[in-house]
Image (cartoon, rainbow, N blue to C red; front, side, top):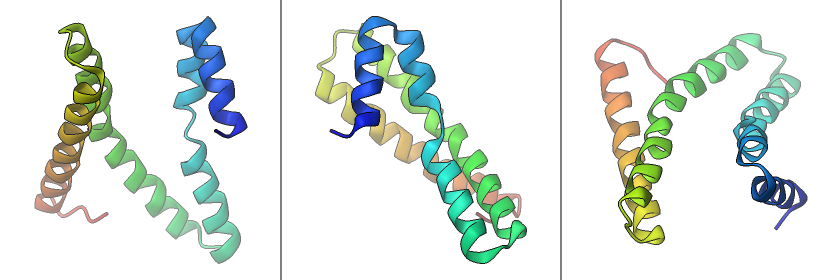
Length: 106
């Protein structure tokens, strides 16, 4: 486990709010945008990446809605995680279909 994961889990043990803040930071997206800009110096590509990330964050929220609901129903943790991930994949697929319908290409 890397240091960031340890930091997040240790903080989440003490405060779920602090753990959630640290976990919600879009570190990978921000780093990808920096690297893309450094490699290409193309702000249009960075903008397109940021827009794509925005559209795909929306269906990813399904995971964070489904998981607590399933766990509150006393469904096994691993099954709840699997179902939440499956629902998220379906949500991604539906979002891409809707965006394509309206002419938005990711």
